[in-house]
Length: 207
Image (cartoon, rainbow, N blue to C red; front, side, top):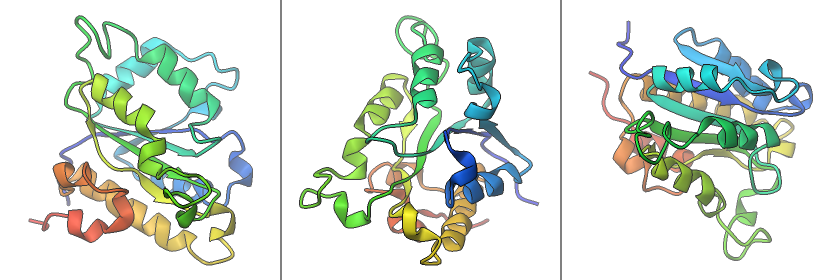
């Protein structure tokens, strides 16, 4: 049995969960891992009345914070932005006395509708995923967290018909296991463009 070195909290946000062909199986696979805390924000807060005390307590209890979502208009779904606005308070997450998140690892796990080549200087989206997620990266850094590169599936609209979902879900489980067991090289993972560009190179040998 593997030793659990890091406690993982996954905050999932998908406004159309039942229609999702990629995030739904990703969420289902994550939920089945017994020692990972999975929170469906739209399911838990259908009126967006987020309980700040509950969410801050969850953050304190975990070592790795994951945002899982489909990218909407180059950002997170609305409830995840609302969650950030309400939960990451001055004096808790940043500012004077705001040390609750210091040293924790932050990871974004997301899907995009467009293909990978659209997310480049030459592509029609003009920016890389890493660049488009700069607000999340800066938020994490302001809070003293260790930001690692995002885990991304591009072209989600065609992923099912192209048979790419199963491999992506399997790779996601591999990432979660490595994070949980302290086998992911966090420093190296902070420097790459996206986590699944060369995931094997970021893994440490199992002891």
